[in-house]
Every structure is written in C-alpha cells, then in structure tokens.
Length: 287
Image (cartoon, rainbow, N blue to C red; front, side):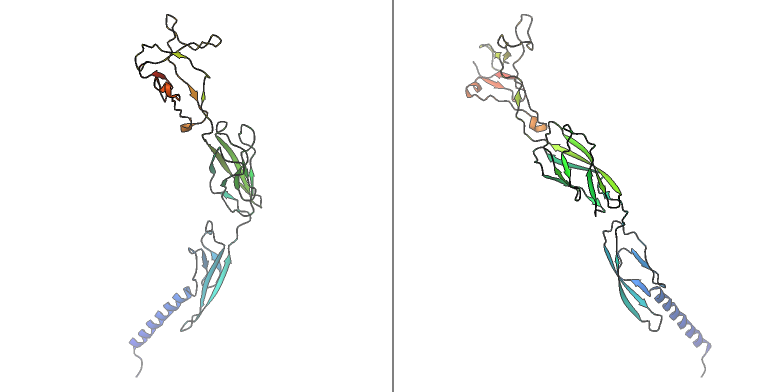
C-alpha cells in the first residue's frame, strides 16, 4: 500500500521540526559554561573568543571557562574544553587614588614614627609615592613622611596644636610607565590638654567693709606704690569701684580650655566665695 498525501505532509513536518532543533543546537554548539557577568563571548561558528563586557574594577586576575563543541549529527555528540584567560593590567594605566582628598587626624601628643594612615591607589603595582614640597608649615618642615613604595604615612616631626592646627599637602603616585595621579592630604591636629592655666597677674589685691552684707562683691584695691594702677576704675570721689575678678587663660582649646575657679585655703572658704566660672570674688558668711 502506497504512502498517502497526509503521510507525506507529516513526514515533511517532522523533518522541519528536526531542522529547527538542529538550528537551535548549532546556536548552542559552542557555549561558555563558566562566565563572569557575561564578560567573555564566543562566536558559535568560528569559535572566536572575544570580550563583550568591560573587566575594569572587577579585580580579576584569571578567568577559567568551560566551552562545549557539538556536531550536527543525530544524535548530536559534543566535547568539553577548558580555557584559561589571564587578565593583565595595562602598562599605560594611570594610577588612581581612591579619594581625591584624604583627611588624617592625629593627636599632638603622637610621637615621631607613629603610623598615621595608608594611601590607597588602584593599579598599585610598581608605584612611586612623592610628597610635594609645596605646603604651609610654620617651621618649613613637613610633619609627615610618605613611604615611597607602600604609601604608608608616618609622623616625621613633633606636632603642637597651639602653633598649627592643620597641614595641607599633596602626594603624587607615579607608575613605572610614567603616568601619575595626585591626592591632597589634610593632616588635622587634635588638641590635647597639655597646657596648664596661667593667671594674668601674679598677685591680686582687694578690700571689703566688715559691715558689708553677705554676697557683697570684693572691690579691687591699688597695688603697692611700685606697681602701675592704670587699670583701676574710680568713682567721682577717687574711690576704686572695680570688682575684684581673678582672671586666667589656657592655651588649649574647646573643653580643655574651660576654666574652673575655686578657693584652696580652707579658712578662706569660710569667709569668701568665688564664682567658679567668672573668677569674681564674693564674701559669703558674716565677717
């Protein structure tokens, strides 16, 4: 019995289906099994391997790929191969500091040789770090030393917050190919409580009437004749009217410079009180 028209059409349809499957197989005959974000591509017919996504900033030194080659037989057969790709840094790559400005804070009590910070650079192989001579320092000397190969910053001179609170310097990183990049270093000096308060006078003189009520302010009196009295205030009768205020100063800053006044002598504490914040002297109990 011969083949009918229907059988022929069915056979042709099955053949077309097989052809579509073979076409799909050809498209997949060479595929990359282990790829990173699709960075590497391969031509399915020629087998040419090419880069289809940037590898920049991926911190990859090697790529290991699995590639399959398939034939078009029925059934199709295939084999696997391993491809290893070494990722090289371009020789002309310009070094890049991770920060355009690096702020380093260090105590004024830090010692010479103490570690302060580390300059981080992309393309860090074979770099030479150089500290610029263009900076502002009271004594003309850079306060830090930058290791020329590692970028490590260490203290190279004593610091004094009261003399200079900050330093602005520039560091250049140069690659072996001659390309370079710069970053600014701001060295912020942190104040320490290393200065004792000092009184503005060695001696103070004052007076108060024994009939003065409790809470009366002690009045400043003239110093001995051999001392100047230009700073005293007087009323129309020539009497001194300026309150006795104990003054002192501290070269430190912020809370390290906040002064607190107190009377040390126990007997005097029973008679006088001093404002702890202003240094104004007041009599307390009855005299």
